[in-house]
Length: 66
Image 1 (tube, rainbow, N blue to C red):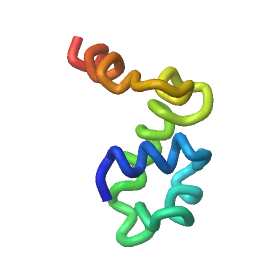
Image 2: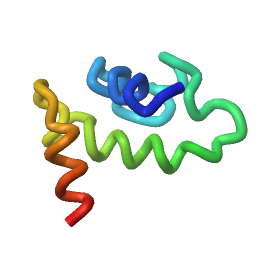
Image 3: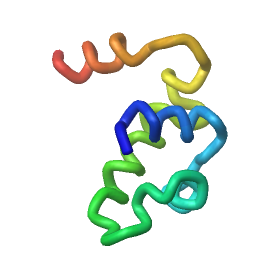
């Protein structure tokens, strides 16, 4: 599953790794990516700058590169 697909699941209302797993099975295998899921939730979940709609991905990536 791609990062963009997981971000879409988060923007669709998933607000925990468990929610993501229930909706698309990401993070339900070995659990190695669960920390990555938590980071994506912080970046794109409720209350995050990327969750308000629109495409702020480039803006957020730019701030990470700084």
